[in-house]
Image (tube, rainbow, N blue to C red; front, top):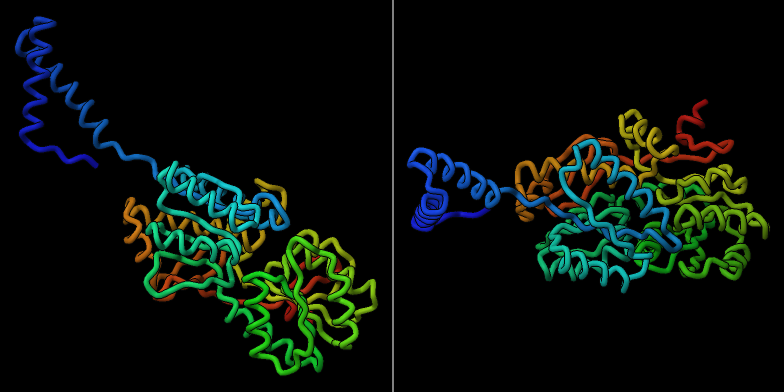
Length: 375
């Protein structure tokens, strides 16, 4: 917003008066009206708000592209609902840290965005220092493992792995010998650490690289340990692949996973029948679900729901705070809302919490585990 010094304002009036009177030879009344009209145009152009630009660095290609695609769908749906009040500049991280950092620098420097959405634990962590040093507001989704400090400007819509691991560990305690196959990055390592701390029956853990999905060696070691439950800390597409490979080599253990597992691939893979996984108990009756299916022809994932809620709540925050990112950050802290994720509460740091449940793949459908077993 532009603030005018009264003397400069009077100077503009005088100049306009002289120009119009001398050039056009108008009478006092006529050129007075013209001056007023021109001044109105000047003031309007000077005080008109610039459209708020938000950067979104998502994995739109690579092995976890489905995470970014679902998030972008959710964000675009929310934008339509609020009337496209701001612009989102999408950049592809491809799930790679260096590409994400380059995208961050492009968005913040070339596009002057001071609000950035980041997705996946390892990318959000890689961009955390960049965001903090530039005082950029970082809105974090699809990031159960997020390393942060007290005095930052980050808001996270994903429940921390600590809370989800407590939930899944309670289920795994009934087994005698638990195995773990986990992604060798921030996400998987976070799961390995939490389950290692909580389970005395975890007897074998094997890591895999996101760029190398041939896990034959790891699964052979897990099979040799004779486990009766196998936890797959992986994404949806990998979970379906690993389940098939596990069954092919004769692993008959109960398969278990976490919220990223729910996907079309998991639903379509026969080997995932009976897999149990933790999942947010989000509001399936929320209009978001029906609207998403209508627009995209498929069911939303939790990545879509997080991204949708991010835009809806950000719009409310901007109504109060305008472009003030500190105000927006403070708006979220210790606040709560009801959205596609259900009832969400942010703590004093800006981390979200909401309820979890257990789900199961049954006859190619995703069902609530407790409801199915109560039948």
